[in-house]
Length: 459
Ligand code: HEM
Image (cartoon, rainbow, N blue to C red; front, side, top):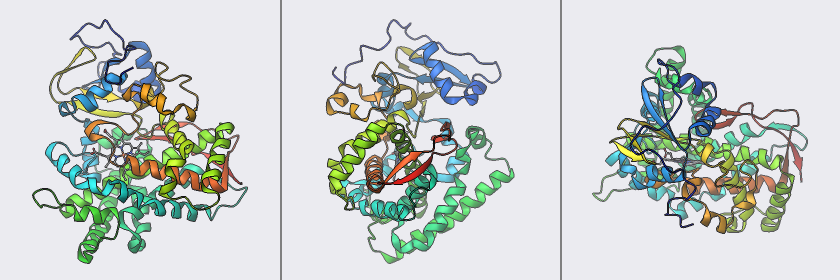
C-alpha cells in the first residue's frame, strides 16, 4: 500500500461533522475517575467499544482519543499548525521544571529553539558520544557479580542518567554530575505516581511535597547556571551538548540566553534519560521471556564485536539488536501517549473537532493493533524488515512522535540503546527472577511497577 494513501482498513460510513461516540462518565467528573483507575485498560476499552475516534470529557474539558494511523498523521504531520501541546504540558509544574524548552514551547519561540538546538543532534556530533555510552556501560557492569540479583530498571535509570549528564556537560564537571543526578532524581519523583495529573494541576498549592519540589528546582537551577557560566567563561568547545548550544547562532546572529540554555538543559535531562532507560529495561524483560531471540542477540553481538568494545561504526551491523529496540518500543513505548489541543475547529477522521478540544493519540494502542501487526502482543524483533516497514502505515508506529515536533534525540536514543544492549549482552545474560511479578505503571511514561528483577549470569 502506498503510505500516503488512506489505509483501506480505516472505518468508513461515519456521520460527517457529528460528534464522535464515546463514554459519558459522570456529570461532574466526566471520565476522569475511570481513566485514573486504569489508564491503559481505559484506553483499550474506549477503542474496543467506540472505534477509531472517541469523544469524552475530563471534568469540564472535552477530549478525543484517536487510534487510526491516518488520524495520527493528520494531527502530527499534515496539519500540525492547528495544534499546540495539550493542557497538562502547559501547566505551572512543567513551566517550573523545563520552562520554555523545546518540549513545551510553542510557535516562533519553539521554531527558533529547534533551529538553535539542531546542531547538537547532527549525526557526527551524536556519533561522538558513542564512547561515553560504552564506557559508562562498562563501568556499571564492572561492579556486577555473576549470580547476584539486581533490579535492571534501577540500573538502566542510573546508567542513562550518567550518560546524559556526561554528554551534556562533559567530564570536567564531574564533581557536579553526582549532585545534578541526585537532585534530578528527586525532582522528577512525582512523575512516578499515577496521580501525576492531579499533582501537576495542584502545583500552586503550598503542600510540603510542592514546596520541596520548588526547593529542589531552585537547587538544580543554581548548579546548571553555574555550569553555564563556567562554559561561557572558558569559551572552548568541550565537545558536549552544552558547548554546541552555547555556540549556536541564529540567522540574525543571536544566541541563546542563559535562561534559554537552562530550559533546554533541563528539557534534555527530562526527555532524554528515563525514556531510554525504559526501553533498555523492557528490552531485558522481553529478551528474558524469549530465549530464542536472546540467543540470536548474543550470537550477533559475539559475531560483530568478537569481544572488543563496541563503537558507533558497529551500529549498521548490529541489525538484530536494533530490531530488538524497535520491537521493545512497539510493545512498551516509553511515551505511551501524545497530547495536543486544537487551536481552531477542524475535521478529524470525518468528525468535527471544535477549537479547545484535547486530542490524544496512543502508541500503546495503535502499536498493538491487529490490523497492522500479526500476533500483535508477541515479541517478534525479526518482523522489522525493510519490506515490513515499507508496507506499514507510517503512523502505525510512532514511539518518537512525528512531524515537526518529533523527538530531536531519536538517533541519540537509538545509538544509546543499541550500544548499551550490546555492551551488556557481550558479557552477561540477564535471567528474570521467576517469582518476581512484572507489571506496568503508566505514570508520565510506561514504567515497570516494582522494577524488573534479574539474576546476572556470566556468558
Ligand atoms: C527511547 C527514547 C526516547 C523516546 C521514546 C522519546 C520520545 C519522544 C516523543 C514521543 C516526543 C514527541 C512528544 C510530542 O510530540 O508531544 C519527543 C520529543 C522530544 N525528545 Fe525524545 N524520546 C526519547 C529520547 C530522547 C533523548 C535521548 C533526547 C535528548 C537527548 C530527547 C529529547 C527530546 C526533545 C528535546 C523533544 C522535544 C522536541 C520538540 O518538540 O522539538 N528524547 N521524544
